[in-house]
Amino acid sequence: MSEVAIPSKAKDRLNELSASDAARLIAGGDLSSEALVRDCLARIDAREATVRAWAFLDPELALRQARERDRTPARGALHGVPIGVKDVFDTADMPTQMGSPIYAGWRPPSDAACVALMRAAGAVVLGKTVTAEFAGMTPGDTRNPHDPSRTPGGSSSGSAAAVADFMVPLALGTQTGGSVLRPASFCGIVGYKPSFGRYNRSGLKMAAESLDTIGSLARSIEDVELMDAVLLGAPPRKAGPLCEPPRIGVCRTHLWETAKPETMAAVEDSAARLARARARVREVALPEEFAGLTGARDLVGSVERSRAIAYEWHHHCDRISERLRQSLELGSQTPHEEYAGALELAARCRERLARVFEDFDLLLAPCVPGEAPASLESTGDPRLQRLWTALHVPALTLPTHQGPGGLPVGIQLVAPMLGDFRLFDSARWVWEKLGGPR
Image 1: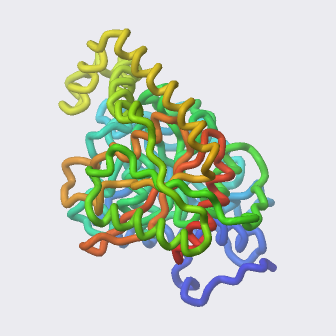
Image 2: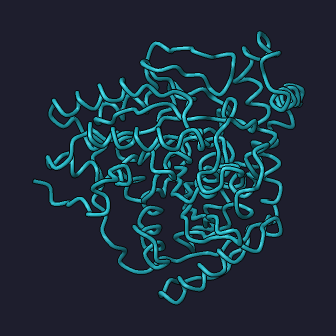
């Protein structure tokens, strides 16, 4: 039998289990994948009309997968656990529509590499989650589960909303600017953007080849680490406590004035509480050159997106949103010299950031301007996340605070390039000291 007991409050709400706890219960024979999937489907049936998180869902297909997992020996770390997959990843048994009418009903011949790895680890792909059009800025239909009049963020809108609303414990997302961390913060869950290049991107509809990063959305750091191991093709890491509190740099960035009082308060309160917990906390200012990095990222993203969506632009322009058409036109007309200059600026800033991290284990930064905006016309301001995406460093948001409307406001933790394990270890310590689950 498993060493993990089902909490009494969760016996009738299996959908609220974390992926890690569900995997342990299934492995120990105390829970069936079918029972868990049925509870997730029941939650979706009750809430999907409001939240609108799913682009494709086939309950019978999900249940067939679950029954097959229950009949066979455990394949891996996610055996029997349902997951959501952002609808920009290829799935051989489900449509991949990318938030665009151009691909309505299109079925690719094979799974994306990350989907294949998750299936190989035993995961049940519950369905495809809503994405903004081609993982850009034109929203889909998804609502914020805390307040359906507000955006859930994007472009990984459906993944964040589905996890936050207990429809599924874990979901795949992507980030080209802020498409994992922003919706995670707006929806009050954990979002993780790894170091650039950490996971294989084969079978992902690209938006910008020098920025696109596969990420994860979950309700715990443990679940993020579990997915990380699966996508690396490695056994789950046995992490222990930190030997000493981390060295934390409070990095307000040049965008600090774009933050609302609730975000400023979240960063300052977190810094004060972590200092009281004996972390070595001090302010750090990025060099002035970094102020141009968000603009450089936008230029690079626009140019590379115009290339990534060249076929659709030239053959189906009338089926692309006006917002995306404007971006594609701008990118296609940008002189190569400007594009190269933006890439060079990003490369210089990455080198300078590596030197900053010689004195810190972790940076604490604002994640979003404030609570999710009361609008469904956009996915919110991505600038506070875009900076770190351009720098290729791993970043994670934790749902530590609330704004004046009682909605989530997360903080952002940033580690050096390839310092993903350091980020996990430090984030667990931070969340424990701030009163959250680990």
